[in-house]
Image (cartoon, rainbow over all chains, first blue to last red):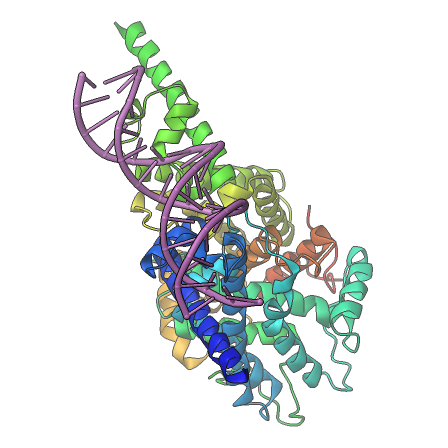
Length: 245
Length: 245
DNA sequence: GTCTATAACGAGATAGAC
DNA sequence: GTCTATCTCGTTATAGAC
């Protein structure tokens, strides 16, 4: 009985994976807007109604692809970070940024799915939130470590942002000063601005050595969140040197 | 004869505008991927073949919409800038950034068309380049004015970026130091990261007072390109105060 | 219980004959 | 330009295999 259930469960997992793989193929070819359950079924030699045993609707399939994409990005950045977990925060930051960029270059259509234009008629449910938060949490952790006990807070906040900054800090990282949390949220969005511009072609005819450009820009973002003089105290690293990957 | 030609030309302009208006409506409803010449024609009470008198293909219609969107954004930012043309560079910068954000919030689908995910199967021709460059040129001009004669160059460049930075500076603004041009290109991409995150929903449940948040983030970007102490010399404005719109 | 297959719905796109 | 026959789509109801 338990083997029967195991076999069935295994088959279910395999078919589910096949459906998602084929759906990802269509995502790359036609875009998320044209993702079609019937076409997926056809390509898999199934009948369209059979897919509903695995995904109750087209939107649920889309949601699964979105969560998978966020998780894939999350795993890539987390495992890259694990390799430098003991390094200085600045190097950890640059490593995570570089890993996010490389994941995006390796999975452009999945990047477009999660960080590109919204899919018309589709609205992501709250179940995507945990997966979507992984990179952000990773970055928060790095900044938190860097600020352990030290009051490095740099930029002063304008009066009309103080309340919002306090609210964001309470939500995201109560142990960090609101100025830093605000800078961190901005850096997070700006990081994806850099990645998106490269990926979506805005850097064509503008930036050529995109690897070096990105490494420098990400390092400058690290400055903004107070990672410039991490644990080193004396001689201090002046100017953006080469940490990165 | 000249009146007849004038009337015909006028009619042609009107029909062209009607086609683009309807296409923009479909863009909002179904997304660029599903933009269909037939559907546009149907909605206009025309037959699909008649549209080919105005746009030789679906891609040409898309290109026209893209150029229109870039030009609309360009006009919005340029006219906002004209209102503060005599102010300090920092305020001019913040004004342009705010204008870009407001245009995006007012035209989310056109923003998605030009700065969002690429349309599958479509590749923008070079004719879009002039319109696409307008905001960038505006920002370059502001930074150029700020650096008139002054050697404010801030961040040192890593060795592996020096050649690329020089190339970019030669391309974009030979009178600006490579460090500044590099920072400017990064700030340009980061600006759209901030706008895109707000527009595409990544700030949901994270940033609430998006106006204040953006104003501060844009002002911090102005720091990065050396606009912090524009022409004021003595008392100097410490910390990010309220310039913006 | 778990799955797949058949058939059908209402809506929309599409291709071609006229 | 019009009309029609034939496709697509998401989704559901139903019936039967394992």
